[in-house]
Structures are given as structure tokens and as C-alpha cells.
Length: 69
Image 1 (cartoon, rainbow, N blue to C red):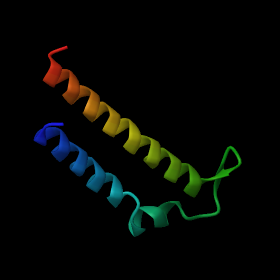
Image 2: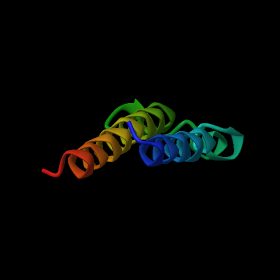
Image 3: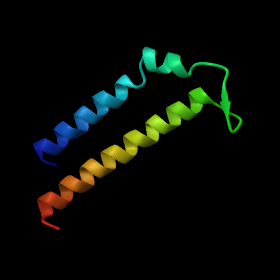
Image 4: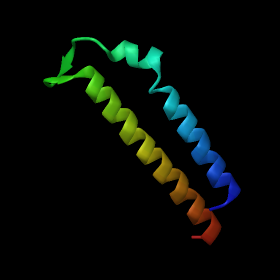
């Protein structure tokens, strides 16, 4: 991986880690349900999947740039 890709991955990790901290978690920590699931669990799942998809797109885009595809 190039240095630029690593930098993007680190920035992605930092941005998503802020979404797991108190102010954001507190907003969803209520007794509300969507489709029978607590909003807190849905929030965690969406952030987790978002992190995985973002990192995949970063690595995929950078690998295409490096290989010239």
C-alpha cells in the first residue's frame, strides 16, 4: 500500500472512531425501536458497516490507481 492509502485509512479510522464516542452514542441511547430493534444497535451496525465499506472503497480505488486499471 502506498503512503497516501495508509493516510486515508487512518483518517477514516479517526473519523469513524469519533462516531463511537459519547456525544453521538448518547443521542441514540433511548428506548426507541425501529422494526423492533433498538436504535442504539442499529446505529452501531450502520457505523460499523460504513467503516468497512469506506475502507474497502479506499483500498480498491488506490489499488486501481497503482495498477493502472
